[in-house]
Length: 322
Image (tube, rainbow, N blue to C red):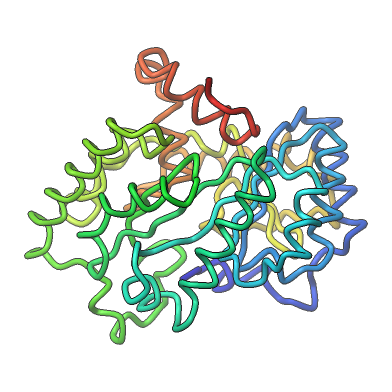
């Protein structure tokens, strides 16, 4: 499901940053870069028992935390610790509104545990915003509209739809055993129909969701990729578990917080050159983090979609729409 461990640098378990190193990074980012939001993702972030301490330190430093998880390790005891940590938002990976669709991708006996956990977490933490992440594949794309209604039934505040990629972090993977997940040319008319149905349903829903511009590019990813200038590296950066810093999580980088502070790396002229590479990237990419952010930051859409963008921003800071 995730390709970050295939990068050459930064994903050796034995080299992960310690709790104190993460805290120092967070303090530097808050104090010297004015960082106000961070996403803790994976892999599976809950594999680290100190994640709650790290979140609490970030929250105490003025940084809101968005945690991504598959929920399988989120016991009730860990739910309590997560709530106490001050986490602002939590998103759960759900790839189907029924067990056989979700478990085809995520493994047997995962759906019931996942949905029970989301519902229980909603009961215990009504103040925490909940998101659902849905990966669109050939196996589940006809369930996009159903997923919207299912997310509402789980008490979610947001749902994001992300198309499957076979390049970028996944370029070296063998997809021969996953052909039922990868779209063919013959699938694209049906995919476009389902995407437009989901887009219409999203407009009628109260959930925060994928932007119209992002929906428009999903099918093009497989037909004739729409290369847009990526602005993400000017607003965000990715830090690997081992401390390597890059303007995009899809690229390797020689910058490491064990050698230089995150604030010094951010301002380094050589890091700017990496940022420029991201800005002119020609890869077929339609990623919910980098592409969606770049769509926001285009001047005309930024002005025209102020209300929608603010709703999305507020979600990650734990602010509820009125």
